[in-house]
Length: 218
Ligand SMILES: C[S@@+](CC[C@H](N)C(=O)[O-])C[C@H]1O[C@@H](n2cnc3c(N)ncnc32)[C@H](O)[C@@H]1O
Image (cartoon, rainbow, N blue to C red; front, top):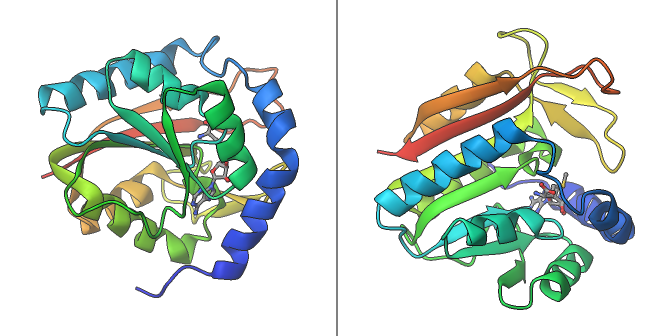
């Protein structure tokens, strides 16, 4: 596995730094009208707690931290990591009791096997497909045995389609076939335990299915 492209990560960071205050305002309550997602986050939290919680739960690509705070409210020792320093500043200001760090999902400042859970909510989407295995390997490295991953991303139109780039408002993003992404997770020793596919609403600008995939480290 080659290292992820640093130029690409730099561009993503710059783009999110520039948009961070607007993003935080726009998505100030991102789960309010998302009952399915709340259900999966609740299941994720229950599974992590049942496995002892480990050393906590990392919200990778946490943005302004609202969902990190939601996980905290579900009884998890949640902390956030994001490549964008401005996002991290906003997350700290909004959640003074929680820990947020600037960092890359491909190189986490976390010991092997230290975490009970990892959430990646719409944050692997900006990683070029060839770089994703490095990030998934890093997630597998930091999870404790029996630890859980919840990863959320937009789906391709067909089950076997190649990964597709689309013109995300902030930075180029990629849609994945859930089967392909589950296959990449399997290669890192992360077994799928459940998936939820959410259909787009007729009013949604983009008619993509959304996938929430739960996996655990065997
Ligand atoms: C679409 S936003 C999602 C933010 C948050 N998870 C949410 O649900 O609102 C994507 C976030 O992932 C971060 N990100 C993207 N690639 C990253 C990487 N390789 N390492 C760390 N953070 C990354 C971006 O800076 C951005 O804040």
